[in-house]
Image (spheres, rainbow, N blue to C red):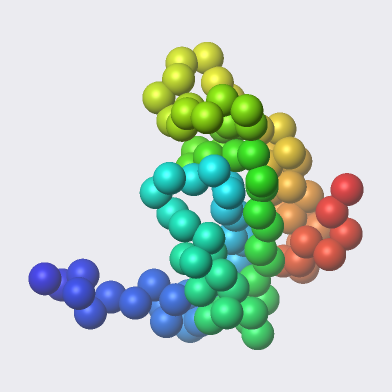
Length: 100
């Protein structure tokens, strides 16, 4: 019942740190409308947003498979996601403006 009053975007707006919001468009648990809602709610804050067209909920590449790869052994987080996170952290200003 406690979670009924919890609004994560309200909490995020109170944080005084940069935020990185990532979304895989093949996600079957989080939807684009949720990603867009976060973007709308935090767009004026120091938040960076990035979408990955062929990645699923855990950032595995699902292009062409037609099936979610969430439970597949031997898969790894897509290299682009890791590179984007490293870039975001090392850039130091919380933006994704100059992604490679």
